[in-house]
Image 1 (cartoon, rainbow, N blue to C red):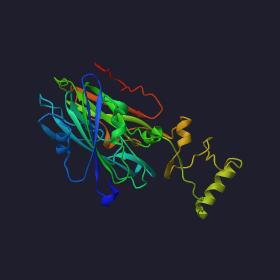
Image 2: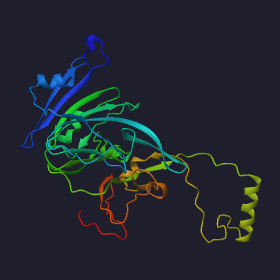
Image 3: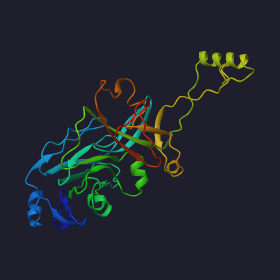
Length: 320
């Protein structure tokens, strides 16, 4: 930002384009009035003529397969923010998110495409965030040139050189905290000829949540509840919490779960989830398919600590 002009609206724009040798060059451009395309002309960069907005979807949905046969500039807009989410009935947690969702959006491109990433930060804490794309060849997967603080926007360009399914995540330090709090997702780089046709595709990520509940004063029991406790205490020889079943009852989990960095270091998660919530794909959220249909699951592990041995009980994957 140029303080001499008192501007508060400047956007730092960056260019990053991988070469076939796996090298990445970055051109840092400062401008409030010049558009991104014009900055690229100044940098003498040739991009694919075709340009399109990425179709972003959120778990378990997957963007449709890419039909075009030529590379394109694919625009992706990502915003880093904090959002309070009910991760289990009665339990809330402040997730750090990409585009307000955990996991972040599923991004689908093809080999040869240039990913144009517009990264903004609306995290009111002022914490910096960035995006490390494992699909990107170059330092930090693009993290150094996508780092933004509150109110900033960085624009970066990355050429997709290798097909595959890759994780992306925030790599701002401490990296474990950003990942454990929900800043991760998947990016698919299709080969030039695309993937084989299937009937359904799903997006699933495993992750851990590390935290402790806020301490709150115990609720005053009603006279009826006290009488019930006294009844069970007499029936079980004074063991008021046994309730006649030989097991101590556990208090119901309710309230706000607060992130614990120490629990993350100790690898003691409070929850391990699929797609960021307890029971996300049970009942109404179940993943469905018809008999005889071919299903493809894009599976990732956000971590930040545990391995995942994903397995569908009663079925064998023909290809992994």
